[in-house]
Image (tube, rainbow, N blue to C red; front, side):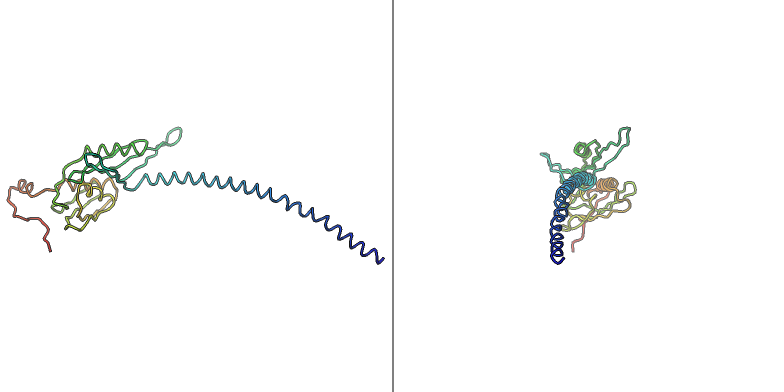
Length: 238
């Protein structure tokens, strides 16, 4: 009986190693599952990458809808700046179609400026149409050095823009819709204030209406039939 007890113990010990391979079998089978899971995870990563691509296109569309972009001038010296890009969607039988509109300001920085608006199915053609329209609409602005001769107010729709002359070195104090208008006309020192609607179209048109009202001394004398004193209406230097 005493010898049988150790033998039974050894049989139990011998049985233990036999159970070990069975216990290890799932562990050996785990790596393929892990690899398969990683493969699926890689596929999921690909899905995230594709989603990132869609997000990238959406972000690109967001950039196209807003923001001001300066475009280089040509041989004639006329420069243009994109004030705003508008995107419009139309629901049709097969889905939705998109079109774009561009609001552009063009000027030579020598007293000539104009605005244009163009529409197309893509952004570049819309900007090109708007630039051509802006060059056709250019007009002469009466300036006085680097600023304007007098205070003027322009209105369009629910927007009002006030332009105030400033001393040299002041710079251009204007918003993102008014700034391209005054910079491309050649003004480097001016103070501006906008009231009412913040629509870029209204603000740009109100600024253009204000610039068209500017008059120099000769025009004022001719319209009023009087002779103005030298230095009338000029800023008093400190």
